[in-house]
Each structure stands twice: as C-alpha cells, then as structure tokens.
Length: 181
Image (cartoon, rainbow, N blue to C red):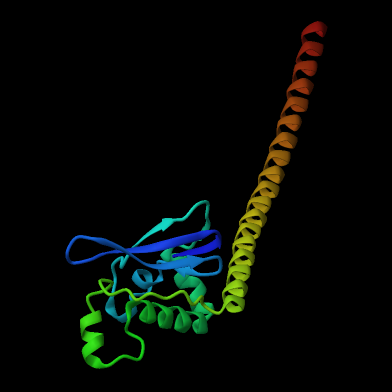
C-alpha cells in the first residue's frame, strides 16, 4: 500500500477495447494499493496502474506492516475497505451493479475523496512512531549484546593477563633455579 506524502498521481485502467483511461487523480493524504492487499470484496489483484504526475513522494507499507498496523487500528481497516469498495464502485449500489463491478477493477470508479485526512495523518504518525520504536528496540537489543560481548572480552582479557603473569612467574622461577644449579 502506498500513501501519497507529497505530489499527485493518476489511476489508469485498461478498458475492454484495449484503451487506457485515467479514472482518478489522488493527492497528498490519499492512498492506493489497499484494495489488493486487503482483499476488498474478494479482490486480491491490482485494479489499476498508478502513474505520478510530476514529482511525488510516496510512503510504502508492506502487506505485513499494513496487517500489523490494522490489527492495532481496526477502524482504519474499516475505513480502507470502505474506500476500496467505493473505488471499485461497490459502495451502496444495487446487486446488479455490484455484480457488474465485481470484475475487480474494470469499473474502478472516479473518486477524489481522501480518506479522513486527520485519521490517516494520525495513522502515518503512529506508523512512523511504531517504526521508530522497532528501531529503538533493535538498537537496545544490539546495545545489550555489545555490553555482553564487552563483559566477555573483559573476562577473557583478565584471564589472558593472569595466564601471562603465571607464565612470567614460572619463567622467572625456572631461570632462578637454573642459575643456582
């Protein structure tokens, strides 16, 4: 799934006659790619191509990260699924229209309504914080490992110094005995 941080993109579908049609423009705060990841209405494949209009900065969420985030934010899942159904033309339509639209993307509807920008911004910030916490946890783990290895190194250095001292003492005593003989 991708979230548009800056810029604008257009969604393009392939029509049955082979033509390509721009069906939506998405801007900062909006997202795409959730339909296939969430399996909205049983759809588990891409529904459109997305092309940047000029420079765009996108934030990317893998399926694993999205699933993990949506476990913590079930209301965001509902919102993403509703937006996906709306984009597919499946939101609140008759059964006939829904059946026609069920070909997963060939009738991607024109929609420019962003997800609740405040909720999405909050989710993005939480994900960034979560990501930061993950890195902090990893850093803490690495620091603990470093400290453990430092203790081990210090112990081995102490053992080595003790061994050197004993060798020196033995050498000194041996030389002293050889001189007296």
